[in-house]
Length: 310
Image 1 (cartoon, helix red, strand yellow):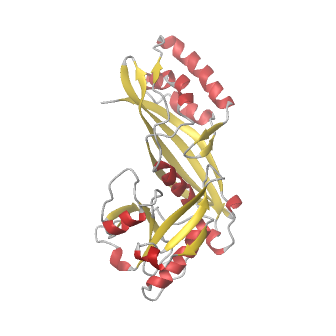
Image 2: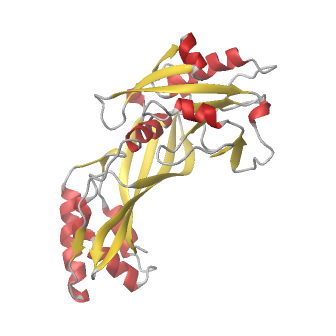
Image 3: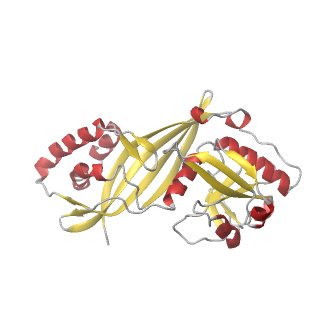
């Protein structure tokens, strides 16, 4: 994807360009802001369908920053540091849905970067973002999760893990995992969640110690209490982007923390669940009419384990 270059920083032109690209990437309706909204540091309003609840329409605010003055010297090959003030971040985050800051780099330019505050943490300035955090069709998935994350409450009940003798653990785990595979799961983070042999192969691989393998197998019967529930915290880890003909495949892993989810041998443990997500979209998405139906996603349970709470 190659975006147009500018001969100089023009804030109004950058805002129009960013609004157009943002609308295409998120399959959103975008509108110009009123004078009142502009005074509140909002450049663009956009509305899009939630990735997991198609009936839900999300409205978000964005402010566009353009030019080299926002980039700080502490930027490096993996992260960008941008001088976005706290007033802007707080103004954008006052609607329930965390607002988005879009940075339009100086020429030569091949992508626009985005940043949104963590709705459960205090705003920090300057902001640091990964260089992989640029506008593309997967952004609608990220923003849908941020919208939910701002209002999530604990939705699961602590489970007490039965301490079966080690020789019985594998048989019960196999039976329980077979039952998981036979069900249709709808996870709040990803929508439809596939349970396949992927996670089972990871958990039972011989490279893991027998102690860790057995512990993970012990909690298989209790995964059903969490796979359809929102986690306390999550992180999205970018893996890579691969072009395959006319389509691009983006792979990420979502790490989910369920704090104090399990009692194992009388001690409290947190459950960690990892989900592999693949998002497929047209490689030339920025230069064509992009339908939401042209963006496909597959989410698969990748692994799970637990850690003793301190």
